[in-house]
Structures are given as C-alpha cells and as structure tokens.
Figure 1 (cartoon, rainbow, N blue to C red):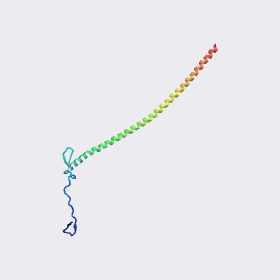
Figure 2 (tube, rainbow, N blue to C red):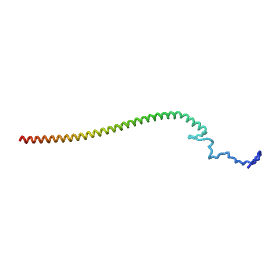
Figure 3 (cartoon, rainbow, N blue to C red):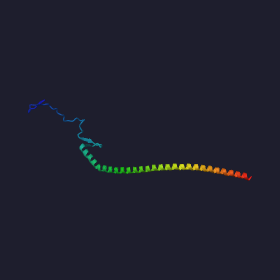
Length: 139
C-alpha cells in the first residue's frame, strides 16, 4: 500500500499494465498481405472492399430482378406443363375408356357373328334336310 501525501487514506498499489501486447495477439503492424503478396493497410483494404461492394450492388440488384423474372417465367412454364399433363392424363383416361368400349363391341360382334353363323348353319342344315326329304318324295 502507498501512502497518499494529500490524504491520510492509504490506497492499494495498482500493478502497471505492460505497454507491449504479446506478438501472438498483435496484428503484424496493422498490415495484411493480399493474395498477390503485396502488403496493404487494413483500412485501405476495407476501403477497397467497400468500393467493390458498392460497385457490385447495382449489378446484384439487377441480377436479382432478372432472376425474379426468370423465376416467374419458369413458374408459368411449370403451370402450363401441369395443365398439359392433367389434360393428357384425362385424354389417356378417355382413350382407355374408348378402347375398353371398342373391345366390348368387338366381343359382342364376335358373339353375334357366332350366333349368326350358328343360325346360318341351322338354316343350311334345315335346307339340306328339306332337299333330302323333297328328293325322297320325288322318288
């Protein structure tokens, strides 16, 4: 403890902080190396970075607007494709329904033709039987 000359109070001694920051914590003299190997002050690099960002900002917003327009066009195309696929699906369903009905009609036609052929066979048999009977009557 130190004795204060003006006051009779005693104050604790304060340890002096070192003026030098250890090297592991300190930046190397406020200088960074850029990829080309040239040393630049951090403030200069920040200023240059801000200039690049400010120069690119209109291009980025323009690209964003273009991307939004492209996204809207893609969405419109996807909706058209969905509508076409939906109508195509409905068309396929209709086509399948028609094919089923055509197949049913073909089956009915086959049955009809078979029955007609059976009738014609019966008629032919009856005619030939009648001719036989007629031939027997003539004899």
